[in-house]
Amino acid sequence: MMNKWRGTLFTLLLVGALGLIFVTTSSVQAAFAPDLVAYWKLDEAAGPSYVDEIIPAYDGAGNGNPDPVAGQVNGAQDFNGTDDGIDVSDADDFDWGPYENFTIEFWMKKSTAVGSGGASDNEVMIGRQEGVVQWWIGVHNTDGLARFFITLGGAGVQLNSAARVDDGEWHHIVVMRAGEEGPPLTGEWRLYVDNGAPVVSPGGGADLTLTTDITMGYLQAAPSDYYYEGILDQVAIYTRALTADEIDKNYNLGLEGLELDDDLPDPPDNGDGDDDKKSGGGSSGCFISTSHQ
Image (cartoon, rainbow, N blue to C red; front, side):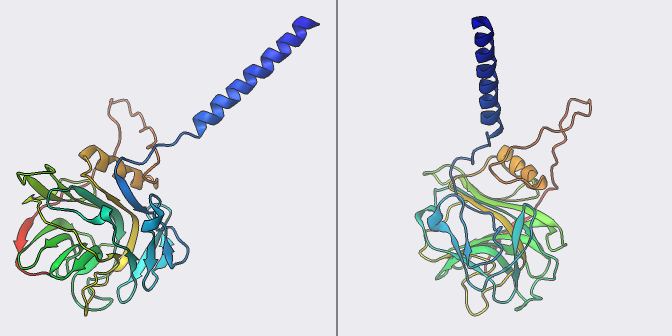
């Protein structure tokens, strides 16, 4: 009788332990990458608040709320090109000195000609301006290319993608300042589209310490404001330069409809010893601009 009772107790303990292991293992999820300071999934069904998953103080506020739509990953926000925007208040994490690295990434989808929603000019997806200083990521008005633009007044640096991004398809955009975080100034600006080879401009030194809001869907540069007509999803900001491997991972996460703290599924085994991760086409072309827009 005693042996039977002990056997039953052992079985219960074993089942309980296995259940604990199962629960613990099944709840494990990948952590966010280091130095991710803002991550707006833009899944909201309505404004005016757009949650930052990392720091609540960085929640965005609708300034003419965009419309919720299906995104590359869950939901997204569709900006109308005339008066939709999201504002994020100034914070130290968004102030980058000439030696400080940063990365901005997001998914975008645009199906209309640039300027069709308002002024026939560049359309800004995310940016910031104060006085003559500005940076922005947008779509160029004459050729539909993705553009990363930085100026301290007068001459500026602009990086353009090789292919159009106003083709009605989803595109993964990454921009960064990458280099030594201290003198001598040896950094560079980079623009990646769809996990392709980066567009690069040497230098990478500009004091982007501002006091204004970061804006999505437009730029605070009245009277035009350069409104964006299209969709944004999964906007993230890091206080360092992402590696090529991290960009590759985030791109493939998005293709799978997964968020930045998810794990990629194991690639299918086709017997050739290689995985089937997708990589995109390259981007090219950078030059110095002498005008703000």
